[in-house]
Length: 422
Image (tube, rainbow, N blue to C red; front, side, top):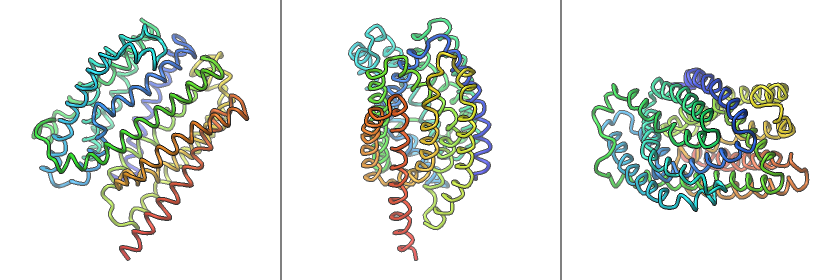
């Protein structure tokens, strides 16, 4: 597996996800409107948190150690069995809590107690949801890029079909139910894709827990749980602030902007996930790691910059095509949002070193600090610049984050390790 091949294959998957995402955005714009986008975004943040808790927050660690133990099949199987057992326990506990607390959760998170049954749907599908994430993490760690990409492509198409049908039939409620069922349905597809692999036939996804493996995965659980709490909670806080300050419709415009960013940045972010994380885990020489980072910047960053500029130039056409003319007020968010996107990718390329090298303390500290700073900057910039301040705060936060990552990774980690190996 190399960066160019990974980027090309991932580019195919992203192109398909982009096409399905565009169609889905149009369906949502017609059937749920800007206000519906706000509720959907809120629920997606809840899903992100719950998926991490249900899996014990270990999937990133599964990818790292599966890649690190390349050539040692027994240790790889030990990782998958331990992770599978943790997933069974975590998803079962989370499902019970969801079912019992469905009404308070619906009122607190979705601001509508009538949506409480959504959490029953989620509880019923959470185990399959979690095991799909585990299988994807194993494929990533084994660098089985073909199956990994296949699972993503089929998942995108299946997600469009399920969500599209549910939204057309039941509107916002259908969209929320489909978010619960999509990953569970995709799990069946992922099982089929993995079925013929030797590792899947030779092992089970749960069994006895290897305490040493569990301890190693625990480091990543701390990082994942921190990220799963901080990032969605920061998004929820900003969204709630936008609702309180500008109303549900304008918060929906902000949410639609986030969706555009997530869609076009998926080529860069998934390449970082499926290539950089396993690769960084393997590289022990700091000079080789530095060379890998430089190669990534030369390939990925120009693509992101070109994509961002293209979106800005054609922003009016994109808004009316992907959404509807009623979404036009979101155009004033584009410039700062796109700048923030470019800086985010630049900073994440360095931040992945923290994950790949299990720099747990630094990761937790920076996640919490910059999550809080994001909320603070958004409120401050919004106070000074109005609605546009929602994205000015986003860009400002990532500019500071990039500076911090450069100081931590390039000036400290790489330089210190170069001295040790010289």
